[in-house]
Image (cartoon, rainbow, N blue to C red; front, side, top):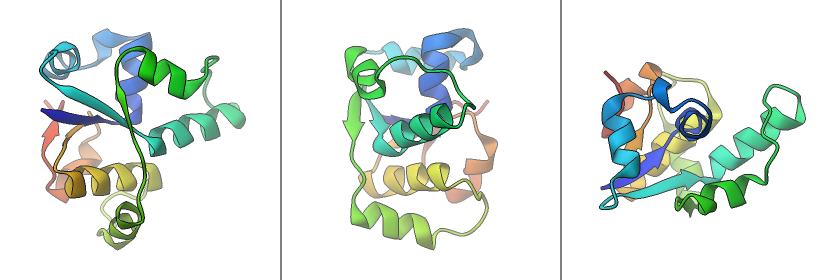
Length: 126
């Protein structure tokens, strides 16, 4: 499975894995799966760190790739698709992840129920 993980899943996997559903935790460690982190998540962490809303004292990309996750770049098609999504969820970072999962045929690993109405395949919602 090609699994794109939401920013909170990335942070929780490092800091409090017990907060992640068992199904999603299992997917994160299954060697048959490819785990992706969006450049949007790196941007979100960097922004929140800069304004003091988040402590993350390591280089973000190095932390992502250091655990074997792959980076997913943002394309113009991703940005355009995100901009055209219905306004079920107003978080621009999450809307970009939804667009990326939809266009790249990925499963979105999230526990954010506000993402459910978009119809992309999801893992982690119990």
